[in-house]
Image (cartoon, rainbow, N blue to C red; front, side, top):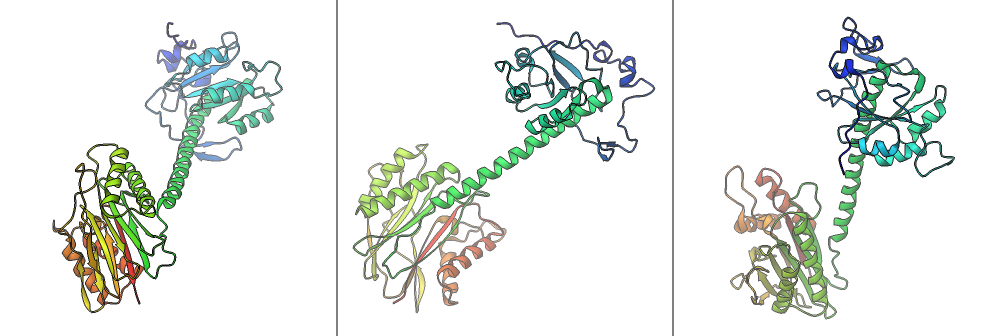
Length: 448
């Protein structure tokens, strides 16, 4: 089917660029078209002055699509110039079917005769059926409604339905119409921008609610251990990153804690982290632990990751019901830090650290037995806490720097939420600003 060629309204003086030969209603060479006020402010319909609208299409000829039942026999649109002195091009359509073919991306505004019947509505009592049809056909275009003189009520209703403005058919002149077109285009652009902004805010609110809902709620009912956590995603304006953690207590009284890190920082990594956390909780509550648990988690990772290069580090701890000892498994993850009264904070053994999940098929992860003592604080963390820089140099905090920092804060009497808040804030200050990597830290305390 051949592509229809848009018909241009016969306005030779304007189309040829000879604005001087245009109708006197458009101005002449001696009297070019200007805004009504010499101060650059234009009177509105109430006689008040408003600032002149800056047209975002100042360097492009405006194109008007006129939809009227018999435009050839009723030349209601005068020759027009835009505010830059360029001719406003006019396309004409006899009906909505033809308008649909002429409605291309270079059309800036639609001038619609409200007397035109809407297809498929017959004798419908809806006087604005044709307008509703056009608004559905052209949701991104500015629309001016054209109605009979004195029918202001219908025009106002058209604006309420969605038109940018209305005009009276027998009161059109070039200055009024060209200005109305410019204002309608700018008003539509402003409305679209506000709508996109509102939609963006709504999506952001929904994302925040979703991300909050995906953060874990520790299951520690019946346990004497105290829990605290801090989470700071590396992505700007995000609440959830690729780091994940969880804590649950099984019916035998054992407290299981886990912290992990999916490589990368995007939403896909965040989603994979949530999947691994949920899988860990389900498997833990089903009675799995140690090597068997990590092997199953690796299978989950391999099936759910978007790329074969994606991997995740993990640290799991299962604390005996008496709270004095624990089993530790490391899958490419930094070893936890243990602090006790009268003893300097130290890292738990990491000699038997296994590979990260997703790197080696059939890998094994040894479970190490560690002694905790009667009173202790156990801190699990992701590498975002230790990879921040120290000042402007390239030196990083590292595990040794973090250990010394926590020793000092612990000696100052900081515990729980206060300790974690102070640790994360100091790491950020040492880095000279926000950390680029996700940071997750959890703390379990046992106080007899």
